[in-house]
Every structure is written in structure tokens, then in C-alpha cells.
Image (tube, rainbow, N blue to C red):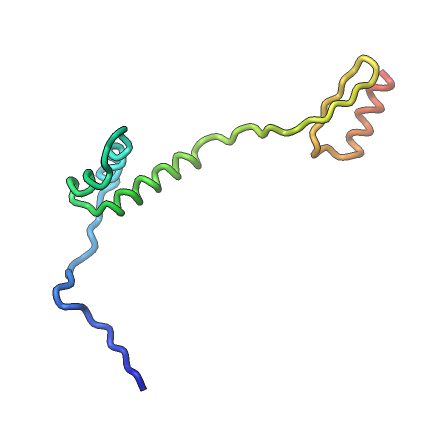
Length: 108
């Protein structure tokens, strides 16, 4: 039988997790987004680990991407010419609706 005992290594840091205010995070991320900034050096100057600052920056950029309004889709249209009329429809239009539109154009 093998018994595993999980214990702390000698010299491992003991303490609570550090908490950073939202204001501090926002200032750190803003500084990290400046052109030409070495993010790792900035993190060390601020007293935080570089991976932590990279994670904050990534989360900020993701939130900004999600907040952008969706672009209108570049949906391909099909043109139907009946006499002088041109009907442009997307591929998501139902057959019954298209039949009614064509019937209305022909009777006009």
C-alpha cells in the first residue's frame, strides 16, 4: 500500500492571497496597453507577477471585443428581375414568402 501525504515544502511562502482593487487593475491595464510598453517590466515595477498582468490585459481586451456592436452580416443576395422590377432576397427567405412577392410584382 502506498500512502501519499501532501505537505508544504520548506521555505514555501505562507500567507493570504493578495487582492487588487479594480482601480489598480484598470490603471495597470491602461499602462500595459500603451504602445511600446514592456508588460513584464511594468508588472515587476508594480510588484505583481507578469502572468497576472497579462491575464488582466487579456480579460480587458476580451470584454472590449464582446462589447462591440455586431457588424451587419454581409449576406449574399439573389436578384430576380421581372420586367422593370428587380427583387433582391437573402437565402433565408422562405419559399411561400418569395412566391407572394413574385405574385405581387407580376400583378402590379
